[in-house]
Amino acid sequence: MESFVSRKKRKICASDAADADADDGDESTDFKLALLSSLHPSIDQHALLDILLAHDGCVEEASASLKGPSGSPPRKSSAAIGHQSSLSSFLVPSSPRGNGNGNRNQSEKSAVKKTKLLARNGKTLHLYSPEDVAAHTPCSIIHNFLPADEANALLVELLAEASTFERTSFKLFDNVVQSPHTACLYVPDLEEQTLQKTEYFYNGARLEDVRQLTPHLRHAAPLVQTAVNQAIQTRPKLPLQSPLPWIPNAALVNCYAHSAESVGWHSDQLTYLGPRPVIASLSLGVAREFRVRRILPRDSPNPHPDPDLDPDPDPDPEPQGPISIHLPHNTLLIMHASMQEEWKHSVAPARAIDPHPLAGTARINVTYRAYRPTLHPRLTPRCACAVPAVLRVVQRRRESCGRYFWMCYAGNVPGQKGCEFFEWAQFDDDGDPIWKRGGPEVQADSGKGLGYEGGVGPGTATARKETCL
Image (cartoon, rainbow, N blue to C red; front, side):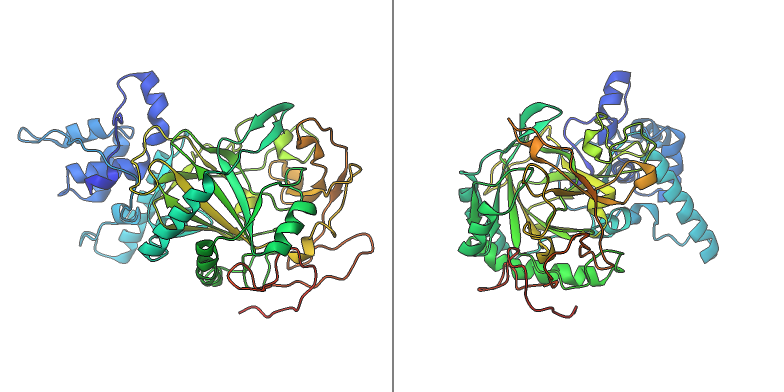
């Protein structure tokens, strides 16, 4: 257990107030409870939780209160990010105590409530197991997703590709900044590659570097597709979510070369994905923390619905801290419908990481996406700048939270100014657009995606309609 609950150079209890404030975000409830349990394995978990709460979450003081004259001091160890038992195993011990299910259920509710209290005030809740991730977030994870040799082959292939990836430049509050990691978009074939370079716009500009799928990327796509569709079937369909089978037809590959490379709090753009998208993210190489945070609407004096125009850098006023999902090598993370509308995610810089045998300090992240043919840039609104508008969703303004809108994004390109174009978006129950103006009839198509030769890519505007599996 120690290999999963220990951290390098962590302060278990803060005697110095400044250091305590700095480390609060790294000491989650499950970490503290697991560590206290490893120090006192014979004591009931509920009792440990009560003692931890009585000492304001300080493991050192809680442990000291439990030690007798023969007690041993807390042990020190270090470990990397890895797999850990479910948080529920610490909250609900398999103990014969309690004479009935009613008492046990009440005890479980009390333990969960206390856990939530300890996780508030900016502290980060660390999650490791698929059960905990599914319970606390709109995500699913699958460890050891690909066969080991296939995962390693894909990693080696993409590390070679990443050596020529570039950083993107964009404007943020009138300042030109560069992305803190490199990336590249991959599509199925030459035809789609040409369409992506000439007709698709990202952040107000065309992409210059769009590549065709590598052999191992293509091989992994149908495996991802199957896993995602199986996961989707376990959840109820949300309004505006597509009922069609999820078939990826684009893959964005990100490279985080070392511990300082990161990506800030954001939601993925919806322009070509549409409402309630499902995105699959395959992590390879060094383990990093994927942090997620729920967005709560609030009354804002800013009349514009674009959340990025709010100068407040904190994306979430909720007192509960962020949730950290630990992603070791060869882990598939599925971000389900509602994730992009109601949550933000990030990869924060790491203070220390354990090198991977093949990747060293690098992490490769492949995000498989299903572009909707009904949202091809030939069909979406264009602003006065003659650039396809971007699709966004209101996340913060309480009175219009959840509404989608089109807006100009040309001003996001360094050296360019945008226009004031704005239009509320309309969609049917399945998330396909309802255009106010007369436009071409476009049928929703699931296509054949990345894993099949000759498949329908995101650039195809019409194709046959398929039945949801």
